[in-house]
Amino acid sequence: MIPLLEQTPDQLRDWFTQHGESAYRAGQVRRWLLQKRAVDFEQMTDLGAALRELLAGEFQIWTTRVAAHHESPDGAEKLLLELGDGQSIECVLLRDDKEHCTACISTQVGCAMGCAFCATGIDGFVRNLTAGEILEQLLQIQKLLSPVGGDSRRRSGTDSDIGDRSRLLQERSKGERLSNIVVMGMGEPLLNLDSLLPALSEATDQRGLGIGVRKVTISTVGIPEGIRRLARDDCQYHLAVSLHAPNDELRNRIVPANRGFGVAAIMAAADEYFERTGRRVTFEYVLLADVNDRPEHAEQLVRLLRGRPALVNIIPYNPVAGLPFQTPASSVTARFVEQLTTGGLNVIIRYRKGDRISAACGQLRRREKRTGKRE
Ligand code: SAH
Ligand code: SF4
Image 1 (spheres, rainbow, N blue to C red):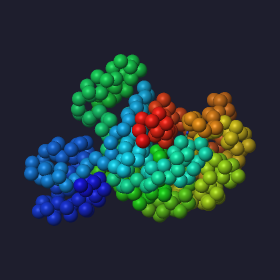
Image 2: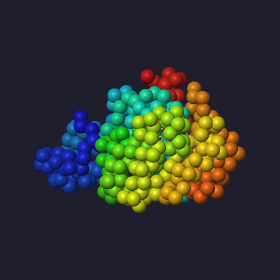
Image 3: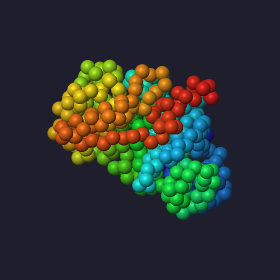
Image 4: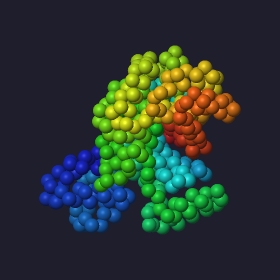
């Protein structure tokens, strides 16, 4: 069986012409899958029955299986997906009160970067995801959305006992569309650009998922060469660099991959990204109690970023079982932020939605492993 989502639009067109069909059929199949949320060929009713049968015998639409599905009262839903080779990855649907539906997707099984505080980093690197596997996460997440112009009863039946969901449910009854993508799940996206970029172009294509390029955020540990490649492509995605420390000495300790690059080289690449694309870069900073949350760290961060068209995203740490890091007290976080804003930086604080379903990357996969539910 050929995995359908691994096929480029050109390859799919070729298949149809080789089978005596119009290349136009390839577009129909893509529309059914990506826009009309079909889950099998049977639903593609404007293709003849014989062609549907031929397609079903030749192509496999789904290569992943939902091994676990967790919902949180704030509307976040997390999927643990089992891949064809038995490995597993996570992806998350986040809903906000502005009717945004954001998909958080993974790019690798595990991660080689080994950040000291990250659940994915502990397990090491297994393999890159394919373009089809990256795209399939978006389709699995789309299945969780209530259909546009459809019937929301299927969902509300299961959720009706939870009072604080009523507003969210009301919104869902209008139908939901995926509006944003954040590449912030498991793995380092810039070390798998050959799969990520084709998947994102399907996601942002008007004939694909139709998500605006400016609604896509790629978060990276900071691989200068990868940042430069994105800058040269001028693809207009939003870039977020996981800085987490204002100097090499501290960053080498908590983000060991920094030893190979250094903060200065990452900043130079981020500057080039801004110059080429005109898009302001976000610097993520996970606050770890007594590690990178001191006044001198805030002061150094101000010196590093002042004058740059940057946004600082402060992320309170989401504790990982077995790791020695803690979330700072809210007063410490507030003081840190205050120091940055006084220093002239633009700052936002991101409280992670879905904490109760282990939304920080790699945590659900670890939990399922430990409790022996699988593997
Ligand atoms: N590898 C990429 C993208 C995935 S991680 C990167 O590092 O940017 C996405 C973001 O979540 C990164 O900023 C990462 O540092 C942060 N993160 C990882 N574990 C976390 C945790 N336990 N609590 C809060 N943020 C975490
Ligand atoms: Fe990898 Fe990102 Fe986790 Fe670091 S924070 S180990 S780069 S997934």
